Length: 155
Image (tube, rainbow, N blue to C red; front, side, top):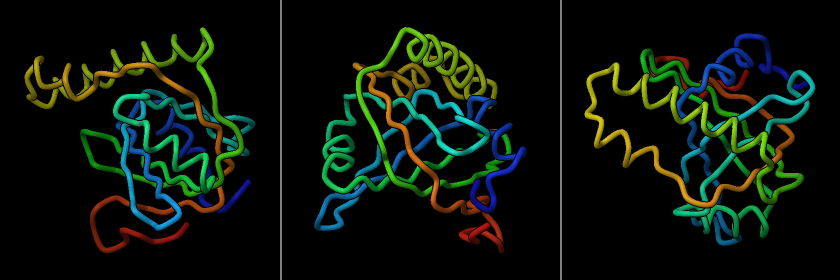
């Protein structure tokens, strides 16, 4: 397991936080997508993240072209945030278990964001997905991204 991938990070991922997926194409043009669920595999040897095909088509094209991916997990209530950078080792259609994970994730994250005072309509639009796919990544580095003096620090 890589440095920084500890029980605190695993607990954060399993709490259904906000998930942002970053990739870039071969010309290093970045693309961002929202994640719709994630799971830790073998205590941190891999992470699977669920991404919407809409608007995440370019994200998938970038993964296919470069294999590089960065996933940021943020607790909405506190902005505690960690980014995992790694190599996408497989991707494809979701299983029934993936769709169940996404349904739980979506219900939990919508409730958390509504609890912060956002309207139901906005939350439904922000956390709407269409045609999910699953990406498995092998972590290569973990970074603290919580705002403050240590933001960007490699763990």
